[in-house]
Amino acid sequence: MTRVRHYLMCRPDYFAVEYAINPWMDPEAGADRSRAIRQWEGLKAVYEELGHRVDLIEPIDGLPDMVFAANGALVVDGKVYGARFANAERGPEGPAYLTWFLGRGFSEVKEPEHVNEGEGDFLSLDHVILAGTGFRTRPPAHHEAQEFFGRPVVTLRLVDPRYYHLDTALFPLDGGNVAYYPGAFSPGSRAVLERMFPDAVIASAEDAAVLGLNAVSDGRHIVINAEAGGLELELKRRGYDVIPVDLSELRKAGGGPKCCTLEIRS
Ligand code: ARG
Image 1: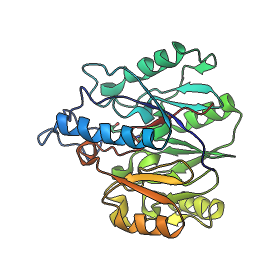
Image 2: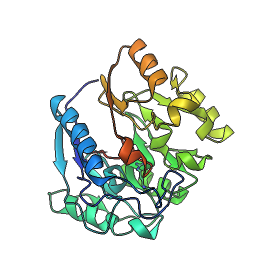
Image 3: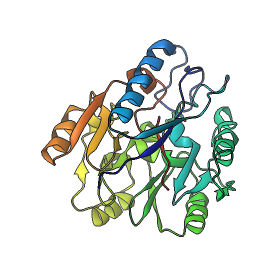
């Protein structure tokens, strides 16, 4: 179902690739910040043209990955489950995002006990929250989220370091179906996905390798990395309006459209 979405984003004013915490990042090669800012502005403009609401959190000097707002929290039913980052480099982002929510009148805010990277590893559908583990978010956080939200959380195991967050390997098409790249998951988790989503869109290795699965759907429009041509065709065939964006500079840090977007679900 299409409805107006509420997103939180963070301008990449301090974006850089200066450490490597995933295989996409090469500090030697670095990244072009001005180009990243232009591409990010393009993504924000797409959301606004679609009629969605975009709020901004102030970027912090010294936190080059803070542009990846998806990792800042998981917000469902107006309740905010804070992030606790696996890597020290991103540690201060957790409290920074929590403070943003506390300052905006969100009253049900949970400071996490367990390591979890927000919507990077938690993807919310109508009746279930899918939760990734293997590289960043730890399984006890899946349990913590289930207790906090009172919604079933299904654990999925990621096995390929290039797809270190669930949102690099899978995205919800709507409240009841998903697109994913099977090669990113353990055999058991692949079987779970097949049972839960017999009608899923299956992405190729090529589309996954340009972070094509790091896409954002509002139920009708799908904002996706421009290079994911095969996936784009299949999504169009299924009746979606596909909006390709160029976020190639942010991909140098291992991120795409979804990573830059935290959905605030009321
Ligand atoms: N460099 C960041 C990291 O490794 C990229 C985060 C991408 N975010 C995401 N939701 N997948 O943590």
